[in-house]
Length: 167
Image (spheres, rainbow, N blue to C red):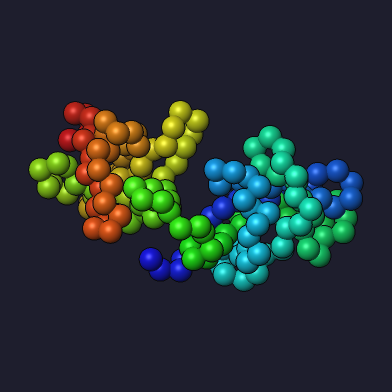
C-alpha cells in the first residue's frame, strides 16, 4: 500500500473564546484524531498538532498548536487534516479502509468491467461508491452486501451487482 495521504478530519471553526478548534472527524472514533502525531495538510505540509482533545457531537474540540485566539482558530476553518496511510492501524482479517477502495476496478460477477471507484461518500443513508465507467458519467452504488458481494483489496477489484437501471 502506498503512503498516500488519507483524509481523517476537517477543522470546522473556533470553539469558545480561548482558541480551541472544533474538528469534524472522518474516523470511526473521533478521539482517534487526537492520537495522530503527524497531521498533514492536503499538500503534505505539516498541519497544526492537536492536544487536550475532548469529544463533542460529530467530532472533537482541541487545542491546535500555534493557535492562541478565537480569530486564529476561526482562520483554520475548512482546513482538511490528513495522515499518511502508514499511520493508520493495521486492518483485521476481512477488514479494509474505505479510502483503499478508491481506484479499484469494479466488475460484475461474470467479469464485465463497470469502471473504477472514484470515491466513497455517506450522505446520511449509508456508504455509496461512486463508480466511473470509462467514457461515461459516473453513477452511485450502495455499498451493501447485496450490491457489493465481494471486495478483493489484494486483487484490486470489487465485484458489484448494479441495479438494473445502471446496466
